[in-house]
Length: 115
Length: 117
Image (tube, rainbow over all chains, first blue to last red; front, side):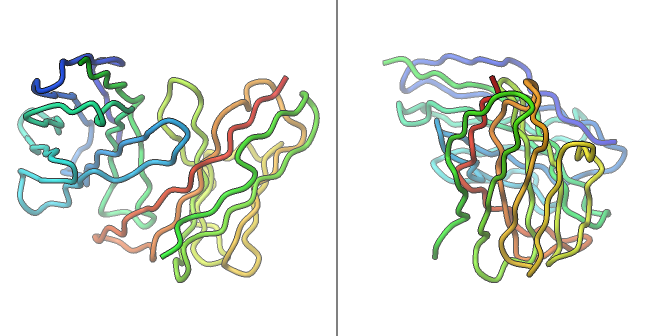
């Protein structure tokens, strides 16, 4: 079974600082990987996805993530945090070889941006 | 393009009562998902439909939860009777289709926040 682990339930950064949210996955073969963002009282929005093309993936709002097979990681980064980035971020994994595209989510990381 | 619609947005009930949630997916989307998101946890898939057929309901507590998508468009999720641990946000999502070795983005609705007292 696949799973993801997000290190740190809360991350706090200053405005303008680097954002780094960590995600490690467990899978016997390279899966599809995703980062979603959730603002208060809203649904989830896809930030970016890895589906076995380029290992460095660029997403919306200046975020990017790098798939590292040797480390089984898919960490999310942004060079300079903005106040509007404050939200909860979820890493998710899907098995490309199975019918269903089922997403398995991590527990989430709440990002706080300090002015 | 209209997004995934859900209603109601909030619901408060007492334990042992029944409740139903409604979801209308994006037009043309064949696949519909219901997720349960308990506070402090990531969303967990409850059931997935492809048109009006069930693809995956392995994590649906079938003794109390039921879901249907009779005409392959909108869907209803029901809980009967509700327990305290059912307090959560119920998210509906839809995608164009489901297929192997290809990913179709899931689009999420705003969710229904259920509180069971």
